[in-house]
Image 1 (cartoon, helix red, strand yellow):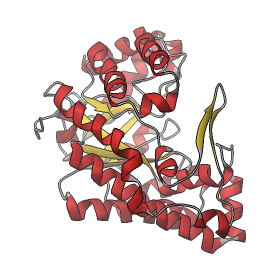
Image 2 (cartoon, rainbow, N blue to C red; image 1 turned 135 degrees about the vertical axis):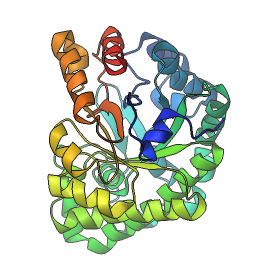
Image 3 (cartoon, one colour; image 1 turned 120 degrees about the vertical axis):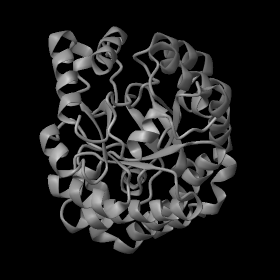
Image 4 (spheres, rainbow, N blue to C red; image 1 turned 135 degrees about the horizontal axis):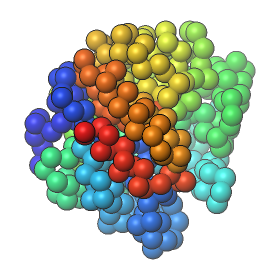
Length: 345
């Protein structure tokens, strides 16, 4: 059931609300005992992502427990490269591994963007399930990784601290790198459009490693690909809001990204000063953020005071309360309840 009265959609439309809508990045995850039980039932992480019944269940778990104003589809940003033909697996305690794209021959092995949907059809089924299962007041967020961030994993075959392999490929094989970004723009656009067709009411682009790009590279490989994806979405679904998250961007990077991509929501990480963001970003888009996720581990008075401070700083414009990064597995579920009470008063 879709309705523009949902708080998240009202905030993204530019409305200043007396209490901001709230959800958390990685809100369906390892900090919840019910998630760990469901994941054990699935067998492994990828099996959970591709099982519509179980992926629906873990997406709903934090909604049942906390009553967040939005649910975010349970999936992973690396499903797109897998659908393009990359090998993908997860190493326990270490994270994802992929077959690499490091030259023209590697790139030639990838599938065209039009071929992703057979692999990703279970994800669309999960979205459709959620449109029926969610409370009528809860918005549904679909998502994908932004091209730069997904490319960094495809080039290195894993996460790296400084994205040096991707930056090296830009220098050594610029045509290969540009071709990879072009493919990811096409595939990511098609993936998000299919999520919207299945029922997603908002989509979010996670550019988790945007902070590794400087100067013209940030504009070329973070801002412009995002703008192209949003333009493709708008051709089909002009009213669907998009949230962008260029994590680690400079102040100038955040401003340029917000002004030039067409996002309705700009998610800011915990390093961004909230007062600066209220002054420089909130007039351009709804700001989402940006509580330090470590406070959900430590709790205490500082969790309450910081939550209230962020709500107050952004009270003069459209705001979605969220963390500056995903909630960590060692977070205390009770601290999430405390945070929500502090937001909602």
